[in-house]
Length: 170
Image (cartoon, rainbow, N blue to C red; front, side, top):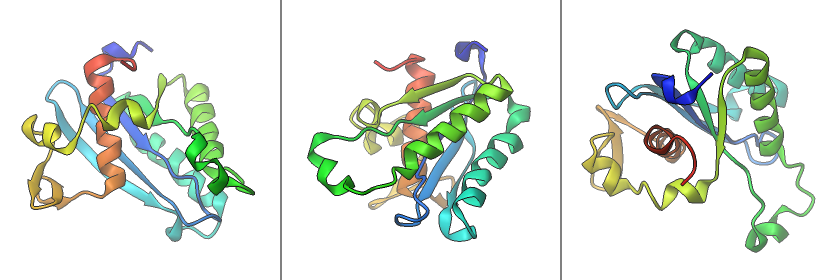
């Protein structure tokens, strides 16, 4: 599938951590025609009995949005040198989850693109996203409509907007 032709972008800010801290994955579905968020939410590891059920919830998300025929954009996991010692003895659950999502997209024939966090966080800061109308602010909190959005959903939206704007990392 050609991502430039996809009207919708499903952006995922994954946290595969189940055993190592009960992660939260943020996601959003961006309608590129209207430049509005069509849907958004999060998947919390605390809601699942085991790691595989948590990972399966990500597949269920992709399945539930398949009718939109979205391109999928995922934040990559990179081990930065300044954080390497924090990861000693880590099972690297997030890269494993990314692999599960990539494989599921491959099986479905869904276009998938991986972006680094650094490529979008500086380019799409909160003020820019407010100015462009993707969300609004009340003090230090950010909302889509009247719903408060978590940091994880905010980061997913950054990835969606970046991909909608550039198509690839710039």
